[in-house]
Amino acid sequence: MIQVSGLYKSFDGFPALKDLHLHVKKGSIYGLIGTNGSGKTTVINHLTGVWKQDEGTITIDGQEIYDNEPLKQRLGYIPDDLRFFATYNLKEAARYFKGLYPRWNQERFEQMTGQFHLDPKKKISRFSKGMQKQAAFSLVMATMPDILILDEPIDGLDPLIRKLVWKYIVEDVAERETTVLVSSHNLREMEGICDSIGILDHGRMVLERDLDELKSDIHKVQVAFRGSAPEGAYDGLNILHKESRGSVDLLIVRNRRDLVEEQIEAVNPAIFDLLPLSLEEIFIYELGGETIELESILF
Image (cartoon, rainbow, N blue to C red; front, side, top):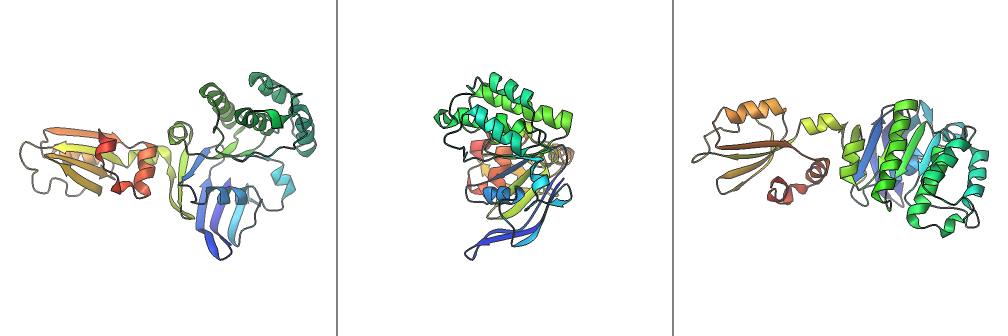
């Protein structure tokens, strides 16, 4: 559905994106994560057709997005930094959106603003930050988008509203095969909602995998033996990081779970704990988190 190949973008000679590749399947939820300054917003500005790339291709449903008005009418976008006409109330904003998007759904808009308890006659500029985000979400979802791109969509929302926002997104994915790309720093929430993940660092895609597959191949391991570890105890394992705390070895291992279990149990450990890493831990490790003591994530 969304295909990015060899994307390059520079600003005043500074390479913001470098040979970036990104693939989002139709009807899936893709999480784009990275540190501040990694290039997430720059990627999003290209996916929404705001900026034109220097090199590479960006297609959505087989079409170039830049300067493509019919395709943009099928795309919903909620930026982190919201912008509204200062004098508009929510009802006037809805009228404006209705004129831009041919699939505008007034019934859905009224349902959502009612659930969010938003006053349609109140100027949006007088809403709180969280209410402005709810207003933007109501407007965008009422356009019935085929593609939904979200930049920090739940920032500033309370837990009940966050749950309602995700409910609408998941329902559209299930019922309408909406394709969603979401960028957020809330990795715990992303872990529970995304099908696949892309980790961005310094303008490059360092890892892109289905989330279940990613989590099944990397583990944190705690091992202790009665006495010293047998020679070759870890031979054949792809150990990404290892350190010892007394008689306990703390490992990050990238292998299938069954292979790790077979290898370690064959040498009769006194203690053997094996757990998948959370998305947050994978993110920390992939971006140089081996400098952080493993003791803080293993215990």
